Image (cartoon, rainbow, N blue to C red; front, side, top):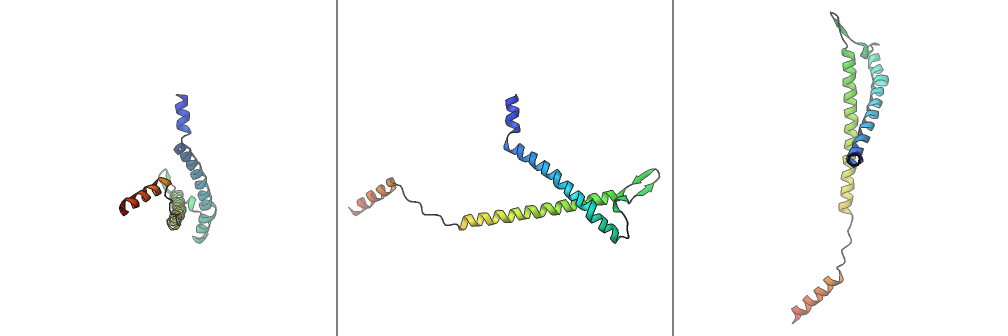
Length: 128
């Protein structure tokens, strides 16, 4: 059972997924910092010094913090935009590479000695 588990964990797809999750978490932290520390303060300045994250409405005993929700939407949109550009550039690169492979001249295959010999025999039989 331990060998089977080790084989499962060391399988390429599992390792790729683990790396993707870690990188996604780090990327999310970068985007969150970008939104919280750079973009939202600038939006707050444009709105007259209002801190977006602190916007809320009190209804009875409940506090509805819609500012945090707006900030989460901005985070999501920026992450989606960044991923769009990353995937778009990867697709463009893959298309270029596939076109280069198509354009690259391929050397004509040299027939083996057997094929050459069979061709000579065919030609001799035709000439009879």
